[in-house]
Image (cartoon, rainbow, N blue to C red; front, top):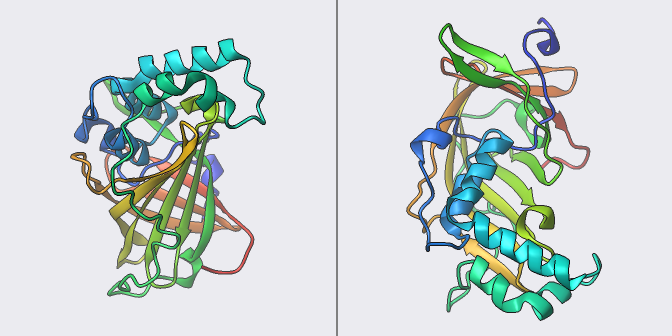
Amino acid sequence: MRSSRGSFFLAVLLGFSFSALAQEASGPPRTVAGVCGSANWVCVAECIEPECVDRCLRQGCEQSLDRLKACTLKAGCAPDDTQCPARTCGPTCQKAFEPAPPSPEKEMKDPCQGQASSTKALPDKLVGEWRLTAASLPEVTDGGFTRIEAQPRADYERALRITSSGCFVLRTALKDATLGEGNALVVRAWGMVEALGEHHVKLLAKDGQAVGPVCGAKRVIPLSRSKVRFKGGSYRWDLEEGELTLTLDDATKQTFQFEREEGPPP
């Protein structure tokens, strides 16, 4: 098979999605005015490129996050003092995020445990832990779709886990550079990988959580209760020299490239 590097422009990309239509189909996330909430995290979970992640955070909570960052900067909090932002900027932080629910949800440590297996067996080659390293991005022009280079974002991280039973977990890490000093969330979406035929799969997200310290306390934010619903996507997969390439089955033919993470099979 011809090397994937020669067939499209690759750019280091720390934003990925199992829904190429999320930027348009999901529309602006709806949550409490002026705060970051579950609708924003669902939107983030379905983004393709960093600009989409930025757009998800701009809808409703960009200004409040800017105020929070300005407060912690003025307070001079040390990077290793995780309680300083909550202590010095507590009210500002609380106004930036949706309130914690009265009955907190428990964190799903292993979302794939106990989940029903796919009706069709997946190729063993797909099973494992994968880290997104590069992607091609489409730009709509008068002549159709072309490839453009993405801007790397060190404060976004993407990883993909596929199990032998056909379960997948997509993990996005948002760091304090994005959410303000002392805050960090790991946004996870999970569901089933459905084999559609030779070298084609469909990824169906069913649920998800955003977990991490927010305003000095751990939060577990359910995503399935949001009004913004998960979308699906079908892809062609290719494996060459230990690199997994997923190509979206639509007119854009967007391509995502992963490297296998070392470790025991999931």
